[in-house]
Image (tube, rainbow, N blue to C red; front, top):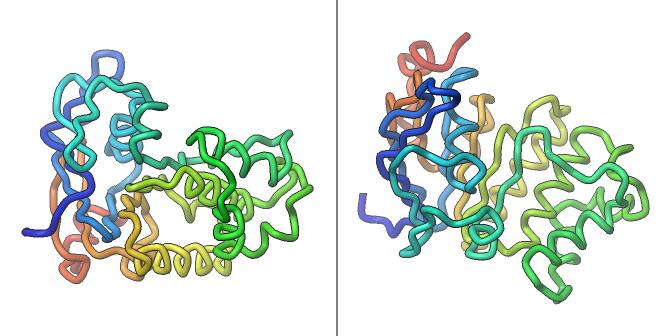
Length: 236
């Protein structure tokens, strides 16, 4: 594979309470592409993302954003260098309004509102009608859109999304998929997507990796994700 990589993960090992969770995980996220990290529950997908953003300290391995080695950097330092992160469960601030939640994305990056808020409201029009509502009263799908919009305001080079379709109604899943395709077409960022919803991955991803028991078990162009792999590694 000759594409320039926005994000490179090499030989990542991680453990929780003495139990090894990740084993020699290596993957690449090429520039301007969407890469899907797939696998059943409990195989290490969320742990992988947490290692990338600095919330879990790996035993060893390397994480590179462009040519910058991220090992040892704090989560806020990684964010400023260009890693955006939308965790599982979304983590919007429930007692702040939608507008205030969005402002936090700008503050986190030290940016001034240079039209970016208008841009993300264009990507997620429903939020425009809800700017004065508290984050906690939004539906799950609306909170997910808010969380992605907030992460986009940090101007990430690579956006990490953890289960963005989980517990969300189908029409909003479609809207999120369309937004990811727009972002890919704009060519300003790459996306690493942790996702179990197969059709969503097939629609938006360029490449895939499958995690099984903490190791990469399969990888390739998304067109190579055949029924045999799905049955072996993804069906419950």
